[in-house]
Image (cartoon, rainbow, N blue to C red; front, side, top):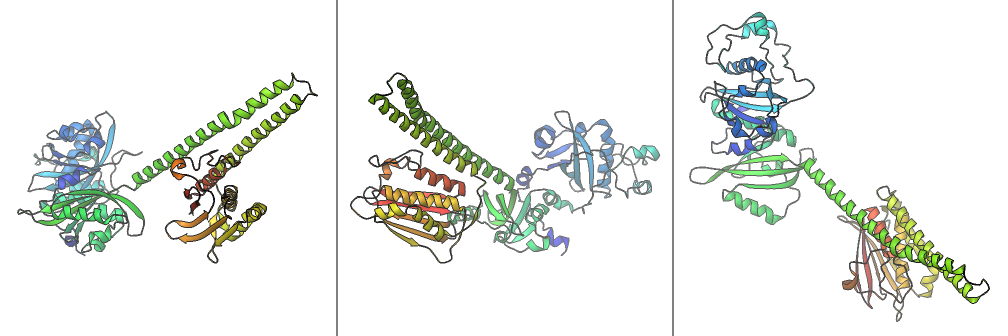
Length: 538
């Protein structure tokens, strides 16, 4: 494919300055006196100067004195067509040196050098000379030497010998074909690291810069004539949002949005998209200029921060729960035990009061032991979070194991357990955690069953392509008031049936296990009708 077919000339109405303002490279135009006529906002990041601080000022003001002859000679070589790339060392506003690699083209029509500069600071910031740039080739290629800034006085003979060696030229590894003068702006856009597409009114690609080809992994011959949405597909977007974007573009309004897309090889990528309609004089949209900036690293950081926030919230909640356990559930039996121990030293060992106090002491110690065991259980689960061993699990075997452990209680309650399991279903989860979840669900159903009817439990497993494995557990027990207790359902030591013995650990453990497995649980309940749990496992 010919270069002219790829480098499609863009209408002069393209708002290139808006595109250049978003680039990380420094764009500038310099006249033959070395004065900057246009400077892009990237100057702030690269050199510490605002664009207006460099405009109408000499570029040589940023050069160490030793670098001025090098820059003069390099621009001469560009004007003569010998090279299109070189390096200079510029002085940052804060005083340190910045090594800049330049790509430059000369416009005879405009009388300007169009320049793109990129920071290439590294361990080797010295000027480099290409191997083929030998003494012989230098003497052959140098027709004149620069005695004025960028070539006004070109009639003096070139320097020779050691004088020439002081003016070494660093050519870039790749020379660039000089575009025609009217293509200078599109040539600059092609050098930008940002991705740029130009499409016709129907969205068919007419031009793509090298930034687009690098970002999305296409070859130049693969993009021309294709619809931009096939090259930059939107993986997740609401139809109404896409319709709004399309309406704005048809009205000639620029739009900006973010989307998740994919590269040619299928790799997911997040990009910010800015689209500028290109208008003719009567206001009709003829083309669109579309710019993409890679946001993948930023989105990954945002996701990590979001997960960190969730983890911190969970840790804070855990800390509050342990504070509650220590201050209430543990402190009370400890205080009782200490008081009773002191009392026993003052009571006759053969008296009834001594025996009764000893019994109370034993009960306080039992309650203390129960709280400590609860804490040990919770800590053991939390310690395994993030390091849970996943394995192939037969859910039917785990259900039977949980029912067997509660066989006597289920028989006394006259319970009926209905299990619906697809044939051959296996889960990729932790068997011990799944057993604890099902055991606690069944134990709660038995403990809080309705007194006027036999207990009935319906347990269903099924696969959901989007959610994973879904487990529904529904009983016809006594239920509880969800509206009143919705914020406390899975909290530690929260109970909703004071007339029945219990510690408020079962639902807390269920939620803790599911969190460690990356699962989720929802509950619905009504007093006197029963309770339904909806559990999902990845």
